[in-house]
Image (cartoon, rainbow, N blue to C red; front, side, top):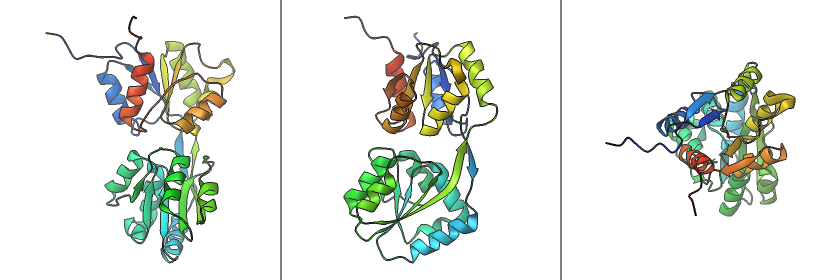
Length: 260
């Protein structure tokens, strides 16, 4: 009797999210035979007081329709609903950047009215633009330093945008030492899920950089663009910004090509 097929058997993968955030990814990689090292490269630091979030939610709820709140991460969902409650969103249309963010909303009893097909800030802006935004109010509770041109696109479509920076992504103090230890032990691939993980990986690796041949696998095009700009060797991009999409991209990048 043969065992289950393990396309990543023996492959060593560095996952750069927290174990809680990456739980499904780690489980899938283990099931496919990979040896996984988890080194979180970002941790969340809230920077908006809960009463400030409540205040903006109330202002947006009183604005003329259509009223949108746009979420680009599960962290934003957690902080907004934790401060203001799910009921604060009841008078708004809710947009989510992708399935994971939509699932975080649903866990709090909120169904997204729009889930972007391209799972980054630019894709979310384009999806909102297609819905028509002339005269709309858009609340954008987001991480400090978020890129992607969301505000420019949505504003150009005729919306009034309220950007609220509610958290900051910082690198844990232990990350550089842990990344270097993982690289010294040997790594075939590294998964990156945001611009913050890209920047912090480069900082953590330091002047010596990454060993030759390490495959960088990104969850989306925006992350891949940042990785390439940082000089990293992007081998694959997930077609869908999900655990399944990331595993598929990783498997494709590490599986030897068939003989011709």
